[in-house]
Image (cartoon, rainbow, N blue to C red; front, side):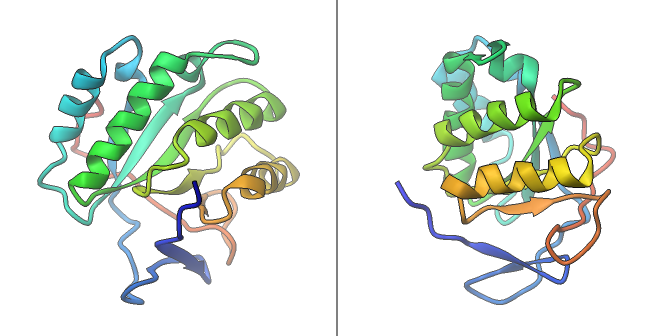
Length: 179
């Protein structure tokens, strides 16, 4: 299923395609999706309901590699299904998400795992794109975005380490408890 882009990056800023308005990337609402490991669709939907008042807001959805991947190249499809339900639910509430990978493994393994994750959430229009982990070198970040863009051309990429026109800088709201 092809999702049409809803946002674009111009000169390091995020813009809504429908309105042309600049989106606020200075206060993403944090959500640790690791809590979705081993939960039912109903619980994932309940987690999303916490954001029902956040129409138009952007969530930083932290995706720990340890939650998405059971062992190298073996993925936790139950977790990924719960993540999809969560993202579809926030979509229904009018909120958006940036997937923020959390990992201490190598760039190639992380890229493979996030490409697999992207395939499982490909029909989630709430997903604006992915953040580039700070640990990636510039060439690894380019390989990450190239691999993701092969199947998901609508994604925008976010980074605070690699400022420039191709990445959007962002901040996560403090004071919000990560669940």
